[in-house]
Length: 233
Image (cartoon, helix red, strand yellow):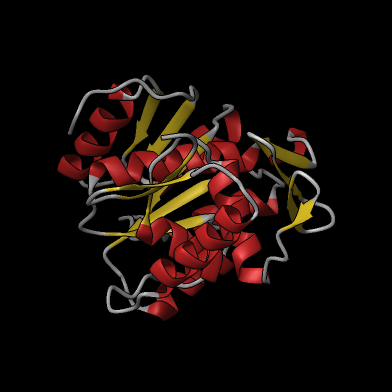
């Protein structure tokens, strides 16, 4: 774990029964300047979530009293839309789908890298604030229209394919943040990352080529060993 200061602040609820895992999560989030509360059971976590305002909840899938699916389901039934990052040792596709369909916003499998967990929390914070975001994103002459689903550099239409548009939007919405290949794959393609695929590299290359041909300066940076970042080098 590397101590750092997050560009985002917020109050996080960690619902996790395993002490060592909970300590790892709390320590990492605290090092990013988040205020963190911890609950060791589903009932305790549900009570805190119902009676306090949190910006993000990390939720263990398998708790000793209430299943994590029931916890998030109870929150959604009460119209509490706090973003939930589900964390579980159950890694097969069906379990991830169940977690997301129950109302989870993201799903992270154990074991996990603590810095990726913190990055996912930051992404959920930004995603939750989308309602107040402008309908257009801009960066150094590049304009992305989130209503029309197209992008321009100056007067030139980049003529993006749907996946290229989704990829560019995800990168621009999270400008300045290092996004892992797993995070990009799940956000753009909507299912768990397959380390054997080169889909991300192919689409990043195609997107870079269209931006370059339009005269746009390099804005998609490769973060060696980690993923990609949008913004000037």
